[in-house]
Length: 92
Image 1 (cartoon, rainbow, N blue to C red):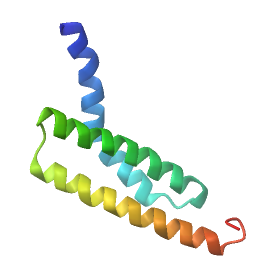
Image 2 (cartoon, one colour):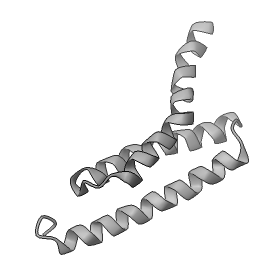
Image 3 (spheres, rainbow, N blue to C red):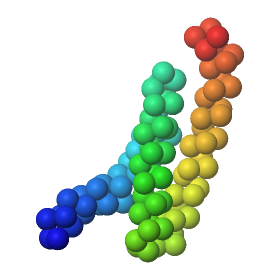
Image 4 (cartoon, rainbow, N blue to C red):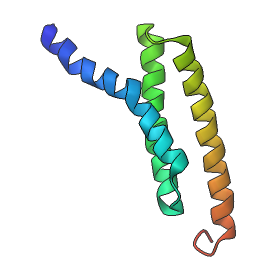
């Protein structure tokens, strides 16, 4: 059982703080070709963290709220990016 817990812990720890770094990388990305990829990666890790918080009853209310706000911001960023790309020659 100890072996199982040690394999789980790094994943939980990575998603605990890793989502913040990936979120910041996505919102600061200025290359339109990489933006959607960064958004998708950040969202995936953030959704894993959200499930961890729900399933394991860990984390704080502040982190849950931060995740909710960050996921919403990524959704808005994705929408804006798609609108911008539709108007550009590369997005046509």
